[in-house]
Amino acid sequence: QQPVQSPQAVILREGEDAVINCSSSKALYSVHWYRQKHGEAPVFLMILLKGGEQKGHEKISASFNEKKQQSSLYLTASQLSYSGTYFCGTENNNNDMRFGAGTRLTVKP
Amino acid sequence: EPEVTQTPSHQVTQMGQEVILRCVPISNHLYFYWYRQILGQKVEFLVSFYNNEISEKSEIFDDQFSVERPDGSNFTLKIRSTKLEDSAMYFCASTSRRGQNEKLFFGSGTQLSVL
Image: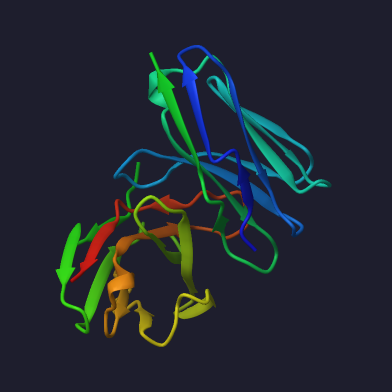
């Protein structure tokens, strides 16, 4: 039921790009992306719905391929503030939100 | 922005003791959740609650756990007899509509330490 995220960890220099992937073995209704800073609660980034849509928030965007049951989060020109653990959350018709294991992103100067 | 509030922020207890973690969801929200996160690990679903009853629970949510909405504003998680492995950060979350493009609002968590 839990989505699978990859990679587990990424280390970047400021200005570099990263892609975080999320996949599910079940048909998905929606995909959520959250970012968690150390010692804090997860903070919502965006929701993607069925239909292969793409969304963006500043230099963070995401896509959702319903057929492949996959979503990807794209971080471009990363900033120090992007550091944290990124979780994808997935819902299907039968289950409440389940989160992947997280991807720890570290952006270095 | 409205907030989900959780109390206490930290709870230390002895193994075998009962603990109650409290949450005040956002006032017009209808769906409530408890998640837990063991240090450095993933955020794990425990239970969801709607219309005054559990709508879904995970395998983690065994007979030692219970949830309640005693007064229409608070949403509590009770662990009847705590075990060492219950030590974790517990997050409460709420949303107004499930599966309707609505994000989850998380509280800041209760760090439970079982000694």
